[in-house]
View (cartoon, rainbow, N blue to C red):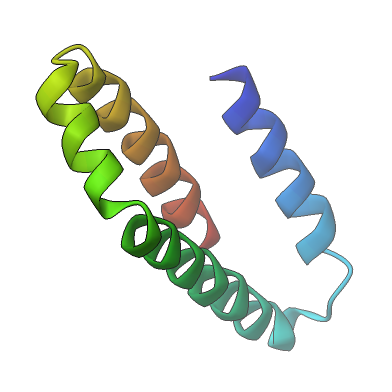
Length: 78
């Protein structure tokens, strides 16, 4: 979780550069960019993700951990 804490710290430092009334706009833009990026990544590599889940059963907890970390970061943003 140290990596998530570092990312959140960098995000807090970045967001503090903007006035309070614009911080939600910047957060929304970052959130949309992350969602679009993850969607494009999944769309491009969808077959490989399915094969990864089918071939390597141990990848399911790893993917869940990645998505939980991403979700925690996105919840912190909003």
